[in-house]
Length: 353
Image (cartoon, rainbow, N blue to C red; front, side, top):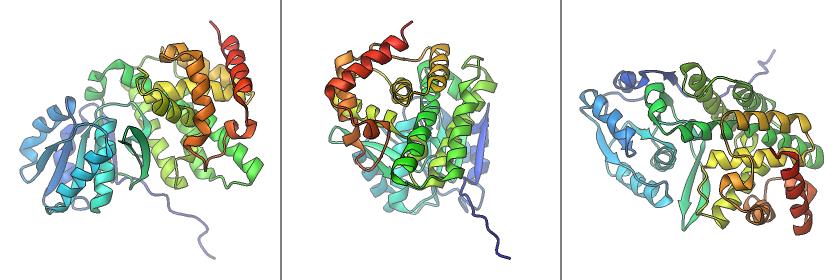
């Protein structure tokens, strides 16, 4: 009888704990990653530099390069430097922008990537997606999942509190994204990957109902694991579909239309998730998302995001154009400007304090 199962790709190592970076040297001695520690390190500013300085005695054969800005230009430049030498792997140490630059550069160079995250702002830690700015617009590129993921909670706790809250907003946005995916299956016959959907839903629900603070090891461990699991969901699906729906379309539109918006990606998708859940007429999901956003002090309305209601309406109008291949509740309702404006007004009345 044939074995009717499939293999799901994962990193070789996932290490989430206080002091995890102390094992970086030993990890790079793993012959599955590097035969002699001949690696390149892409280091972001701030905590990334501190981690590398602490690990430098174990990185005698490593070349260390600073990476600034999450742009396509930076990724192409790093890829060129990698191809000019001989390395077993690329190690990225820093926040989301540094990891996104390194993921794309590693893919261009055919090198495995070790991701060492210094904050938990979004689900790009282990995802097969690199989000980079090019000519003022953010683009998503398919990349290979990291072969190892390290999250040192001691460093994460030292990152700005807002960045940790942002990760909460990003991971709970999986739930309306799944609702959009299910809607696309019902309306257009789109194939839904049950394994990927399970990973994404489990990640979101692990965080959604927790009522402890964002500074404790238990919460940070759960959040880090949830963000990594979201990355595995995307890798399993072969796209960002299980973690990206109408709420991310709105976020992409805000990035393009209002680049000076002061909110982070996770803050924007968290608030947009509340709106798209409302459009799904899912009162229970709206209640659960709203409670979580309030509990962690995350934005819930356009005003909270630093936008006017009219700007948010403009973002919703332009959102479907950001992902023309993706069917969500926004495409399903196919609302005109007046109808969108009424929906936003109704939504704000429903979630008013």
